[in-house]
Amino acid sequence: MAKTGRDKNTKNKAKHSKLMDQKKAKKKKEEAIRKERLKAIIQQAKHQENNYFFIIRHNF
Image 1 (cartoon, rainbow, N blue to C red):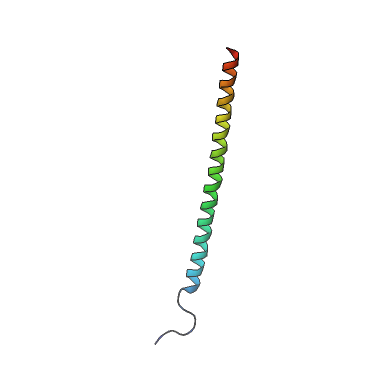
Image 2: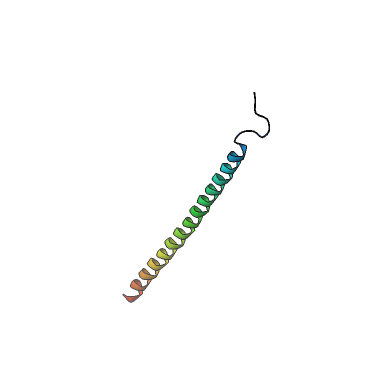
């Protein structure tokens, strides 16, 4: 005989899907933050490099 009532595993599947979506969103957010940090570091390094060469050129 077939079971009556709630379908098997629907509660667990919904919970799992929710948790996996949260995990994916968290990873995406962390990647975006990391990209922004790297961009800032690269921009700062370029700025320092430009200042360094500017100082050298004007001293000679």
